[in-house]
Image 1 (cartoon, helix red, strand yellow):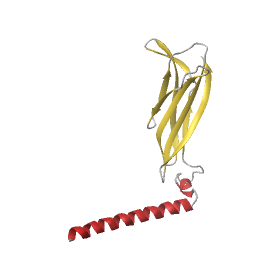
Image 2 (cartoon, one colour):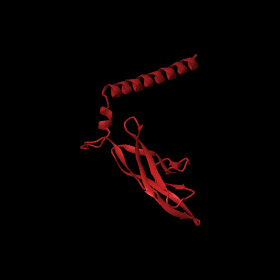
Image 3 (cartoon, rainbow, N blue to C red):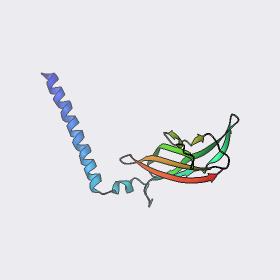
Image 4 (cartoon, rainbow, N blue to C red):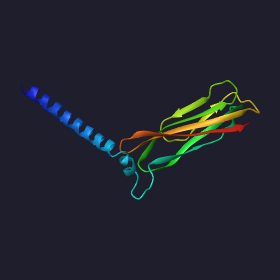
Length: 151
């Protein structure tokens, strides 16, 4: 019989934890976003954010082959926020080809390579960066671009 009571005790503890978590979520929802403002360091006037930098498309040579590239970086970030996902794309404008993209988790700089390179053509770069902000660690995303260049 002791085993049955142990199971009841474990389940009761789990239910209490779920009730506490639901109460906390209800409180944050009731505050209407005040939780995000509290995530910033003391004295900060803005919500947590990251600065993303996207380059215009540029020509690179890889193993003797010319390609079009773009880079995407993050930092600095303010408040309690953790970069978690970045995507950078290059597209040949009017070429009928899909964009070529690179996706990477974390906050390391990323680059994309687009081939084939067509001299005189116009290319566009776009980037999207996402980060998780305290206290709920919901993903906040920002998009940069498109930036175009005739190469």
